[in-house]
Image (cartoon, rainbow, N blue to C red; front, side, top):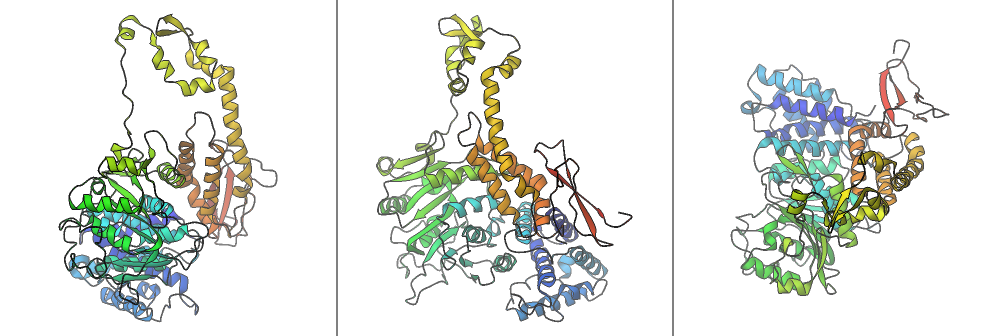
Length: 638
């Protein structure tokens, strides 16, 4: 039976608790993710002669379980991991953590108990039924842990984790289409854990060929494991410094070029020029200007630009200062704009990234359209976020709105603009977003005459013009002239009158009809979800259709409705959908029974000792006929 996502998360975080006290939280990943990898490949591939990873004798997780309580457990775990690494060319990848390190894991019985408990936690997980295709439960677990490692460490650990929400934006604006081929390439010169590369590859209908480079040894190892966990065993991730020692080169020793490139390089990297011949770079990366000695933001951007094919496209996360800083950076910025390489800029909220609270932006590069470019498309997404502890976090609606607006080049007041190059030139190629998009809220004007003499200023009522277009008669029914420039409310119990007003009732009926049509279009797919289905494809179909149907809805924010659905999916539907989709039910039937009655059941074919699943239609749910999944042991005493 496939494990549910919340249960997996709970177990993984419990394993972190076993490691507390002996090491910095940023080092947990070396142990926890290694054991997760060992458990996954052992459950998934042991005994399979055609598996992408060979699990040798003496190199499986079961061999670790046999060591519980053994006084040599630390040394023996190292040997088991080493056996798997040697068999699969993973030396230096999965054997980074030392499970016999007394300074981190304790001495004598303390180490034995700690490692025995740690192995026991993972032994309680059954990962054999979880699949890589479509719904990557294990990959999601990687992201969950990396986010928490970055939060817990209290240090600048953003180098191994780009927030998944930001990665999703880059993946969707970099230019991938349904026609993108599997043999097309994506490159990240500072790939960290590889999560950004994987997000981009997953956007392509058949995947992409992955190339990356990472300087930090343990982070490079994490990226390699992450690729295997996500089903990309043929990835190409190299370990070295991208700027001083770029690995990917062509036959003529020039930089290899790629179809797509993405990156989240270290912000304002001070030692970027170590080992780099800036004045006579053999790769010609600095033809548009030499970046400042103590700030490497443009060094990474120029490296990526040089690494793109003539039709290549890229997206790079950089600190907001690259848009307006002067001197050497101003010269580079001017040259890049004049060349037409910058397609657009997306401003992000502050405090999204670990290790820094400064705001960042996404620079979108497009060589294919450079010659014809007449302007830069700018999006100010700095105000769309939610608080998540001491960090800010993009919501699903924020991500979708940014992507939609950018990809369709839709101009919205105080949010997005296509800025002509002539206007940018007048501003001396300063690209600071507030120069071009005034995102500030209109000032709230107080009317002293209204405060002193009463009445409602007509300009305040006029500001509600969007409502009066939908309810043209309602203004006259609610307000009457009092004196020149002012009106008065002429009814009592305003809320009740509005709700009973014919125009409001018609509005409510139109809105409900949109929802009802959407629900009817998808209810059969929800009730008929089966093992072969992909829950992520299901929620994508549901949510995209909801957005489409409410495009022309009066007064309603369709992205706000989308957020309600995505929150409900994340909190309630996702676990059950993933569980069913990966075989958790055995056989899924109509949740409401043949007649769709409340309390209808769907059951598999339970055997003694199995779990029996029952889906009940909840009359109190905000979603009509939504199901609550209940589990109990099968058999006469279940």
